[in-house]
Image: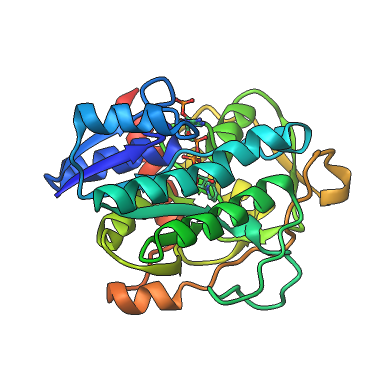
Length: 288
Ligand SMILES: NC(=O)c1ccc[n+]([C@@H]2O[C@H](COP(=O)([O-])OP(=O)(O)OC[C@H]3O[C@@H](n4cnc5c(N)ncnc54)[C@H](OP(=O)(O)O)[C@@H]3O)[C@@H](O)[C@H]2O)c1
């Protein structure tokens, strides 16, 4: 087994490289400067230099949700076009693809967790382009695997957790949206799931267990960080509504993913995001 990880220096790519290393699986990661996923000749060149591979995990994406509203064609090139290119490269060279998608493909209006077969109805450009990418990939490589995840946080880059920790060390009061609900997902936990899914086909939802709001998530970050002795100065977290938070892109109000399908195949329940959060805080602590 030899795995190609695109977006290898991103939040998820960083966690995946660590998990592959921990499990002794051979891998090569690529960043944009090494292999532009929107350019077939760039990907071919990388493949000729570092391949052959048995699997590719497509973590690269245009993830600036708000910027995507202003630059939809940039987002479309990466999120919609690259899965098509990667799918055809995979079909030609006989490797399997695990592609990462998002809760933003749904409309956020549901009153129960989204299952894999629920209707796709994205409201943002980011969500639309990710949904197009899913379709293009399955056309090019019908046996590909798509993992939809949500609210990623981890050690390898900027996330809600890192932003909160920074703000909470600088400001006595912060405002956090309280009317969006989802399932935060620790990138290292998702990385282990991805490794299990190498070679799978179809669409799966993968997220840590327990739904929450950004507001409650922030409260837990504060409590746990304080308990570990972080220099938190934030005394008060003020709940605000999505409409008060001036974001360019619409966010799904309810984007809780149902993970029963993947848990049945994995044979274990995904742990709570709280445990992932504590792992992250401990690791940062140990490093500093
Ligand atoms: N973050 C979340 O909350 C979240 C939630 C649900 C789903 N997801 C999905 O999870 C996956 C991983 O997200 P993430 O949070 O790890 O994203 P990230 O930290 O923004 O990393 C994405 C990586 O994609 C790379 N990239 C962008 N354009 C590229 C191009 N043209 N060619 C090659 N590489 C390119 C970037 O590489 P360079 O650094 O080299 O530019 C970047 O490191 C994505 O598919 C995302 O849609 C994320």
